[in-house]
Image (cartoon, rainbow, N blue to C red; front, side, top):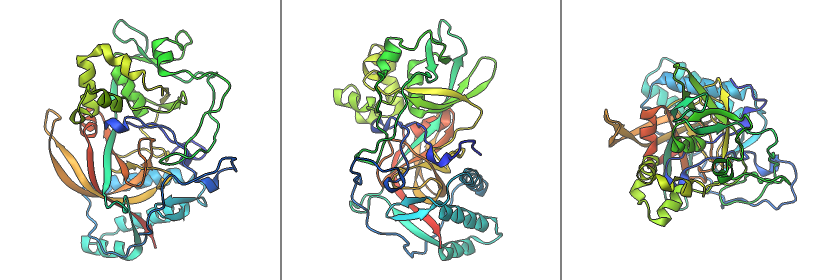
Length: 408
């Protein structure tokens, strides 16, 4: 359970490993009519989808994970929604529903899970009691694109040493704050920075040491690339020599927009599309360390951190559950939505290499967001914590289907 006053209105940066999605950022999740009046003319980022809601189609609802993990994800989501404004209306593609409807849906679904009934009876009751809202890129006939993210565990030190020289910074108290100003954008609405104070770029902070000697360092890392991808992830665990595992989470940003380093590398021809994963980029920089600053500094966006006692949380405020949590565009889909997905997952060997792909079908909870996850046909699946999860998420990009469920 979160201690935020309204956890449903917050978001964090998450790891987007595919080269054209290597970042995430806080985004404004409220719809235009729910915000204060603005002098700007608000326009939708894309034409409305066809109204495919409430499709009365009987489906065989298959789930490849344990029922207990599903219950855990639902309980965590219900816990944070107790603190939300349940009268607020949110989008599910072409539909608008209240948060109360989402809560009622999760309670009704949990009631079904608790019943001692056969799979056939479970399917019958599910199709009888719930609407099916199929979503995605219907107009172009394309399926939903799935990518993955995870929570890294990174070696760290509390003080600077000969090897651990790259700091994680907390946000300075004097740093300019964001003010909410709605502006049209290709894939939704976002916050624009308005301030008379100068903003610091990534090069200012890491290249010119603009924040050094201000006692802002939370910890020190050995690898600059690990630090960069932690910025993209927005949260993770730091492993200290005494065995302590300390969670860190997003505290704020320098308010600059994100620019994909991977896209620039592809444009320059230094990597090929097949190398456009997090691992592929790391390998290039391992072979060409002289180019690290050249490319990283092209992304002005910088993330500040704070220590945390919580497990990784999504933008909804709920703790994420491996395999059961997804991130979507919150201008189109709601935090707390009950979703069914059909897609493939990677099969790993003992060396954490992908040896094949396996079809999966499961229920998940929409609990997260990110600026790289834009439009009706984009989903990010949370793979969990640590190296195996990173190996799976780092190369993950598959197409599949997803549908939201609503209690009738």
